[in-house]
Length: 574
Image (spheres, rainbow, N blue to C red):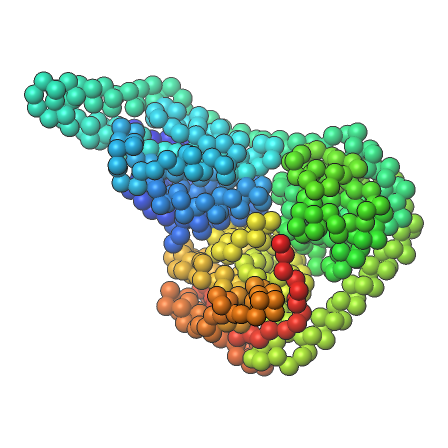
């Protein structure tokens, strides 16, 4: 009997297919027992990557992603990834190793107060002190992570609960020494070891618990429908919150089509309508919101991306739908607030409203014309001579070669933000970005989770040269686990998104310059395949070579030496 087996049994029974980790003595039994029960253990090179990968799996499958990390530094290395998951509303469970229960607070290796550290970042935390509590604690964690507003849950699993009961008893036996005090201490230690495992057979792992997403309230849906029926210039913004339940992506897409409202897609909702749907508007969102008389926000909060509400026409009616009431009312109170799953709200609105798209046909045509103008501007900018390579020209070629089953992972600043204007996700759940926290370093983990969730897909990881350094070592992970991806690094030798503002306003490039590092050689050092683009005429040939290497099973890095343009000048967000 060991606690690692209990943990592994819960994971297997609850439908968890992958356990992401970086090994450590505090958690070894969990890893070994998970493997024995058919849960695939994916060991990575950084604990943050493990949590990012769990995050991506949760977003793409709807099953909570699970990571296990060792005590102390293992847990502290996950802090950024935990907060990213919290703000992105991703249901994940982090299993944290811990020192033996009897040694807590006595200076044991890697022993810190982990619970106080992670509590502000998690929906719930649990500190298990007896082996019999491992099963209910983990089952509850997986359920809580999905309920209401999804998010991370932390479960601390002390090492003496995870190893074999007899071995733990040996650890504690005879430690008291000789003499009367020693004998008394030995009696206590034997009692303590028995207590750790008392009643452990009373609760076995149960079947998978299905968590029903919160249905939107009917009355506000009706109010939103009446507003839409009277609107002349409506705009629908669909954000990540509308795809918190990935199983209803097709249903949400169908509802958007039936609503026939000019639609902007953001975050995980990119690609919801496919590559070139006539309802989707890709550019000039701010201009549209400034003139709209009705703005419907489905799973997209009013935050810095909407300039805290200032980008929305003051006279417009605002409908906001989502699971988090605090987010729905932040910065600008909506005229109609719909509390519940945002994707189900869109579906309910399409069922309720008697839409009259002819009324806003002229409005929709105006927005389409603005899109066409922006596309023409992008095309002109892509033709400009930029040394060594124009980033827009590179991205337009990537757009041309990505297959219909491709998944795009975004991890970077200026280069990746430019890509968001040019690349068109092929379908629902084909775009992964960090979310509102704006985290750099998600790339390796997100690509890992995407490839595991959709093994038939080509996963394209878009890096800036700054962000690439956070997870480039995961090329080793991809290779070891047979998970090929294609990473394209836009290498402009700098932190360009920051440099744009800093150099112009403050007149100094301190801290924002990098080298044109040979990242393709780094990839080869890890066993992958590396290619370099230094001239425009090399783009097409190199991208095809990258795809061939990917088809052979290799992770690939394309080191694209790019210059800078004025395309995103003045675009810094605060």
